[in-house]
Image (cartoon, rainbow, N blue to C red; front, side, top):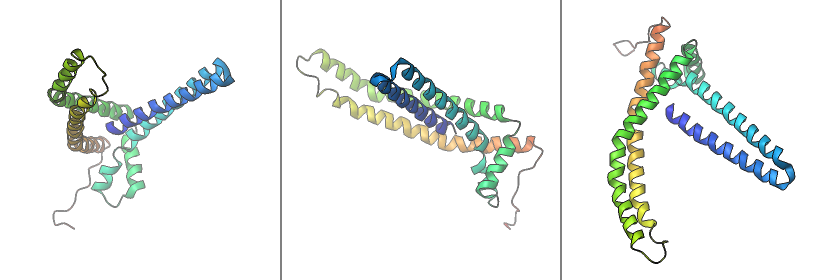
Length: 196
């Protein structure tokens, strides 16, 4: 869920940027300053509304997949309905715990990958700086030397983040779903020991 919210936030940012750019272009072609501010306000309100809906829906529906995996008879819509029922009355708690989990995981990933990126990228930056200080000609061929270490550092960072979230994310969701099930007074469905 945290990754989807981050992606949504990025999409909302780009949508607001696109609407603001369109408003400015329209405003400079005769629409006036009111059209610019109107476009920016409308784009911002739409982006905030979309972001609020995304947070609401992803919080309510985040247990659909674990519930469907646990009980195959539920199906897609049954698991969505069950997820909505589990979160009913606990929305702010679930949203807060999910955001807190995302923040803690972000700090953990930063603590792991920060020094690694520094080790991978710092020598390239220092070499680039040294070459820029001692150079008298053009600078067009200097920047490509930085992109290799930068791509390697970012690739390793993204891989470690995906590995960490791939393990911890579903575990967190399953434990939170079990907690909500227990708080609702229901026992989680268990499979019989004989496999039937």
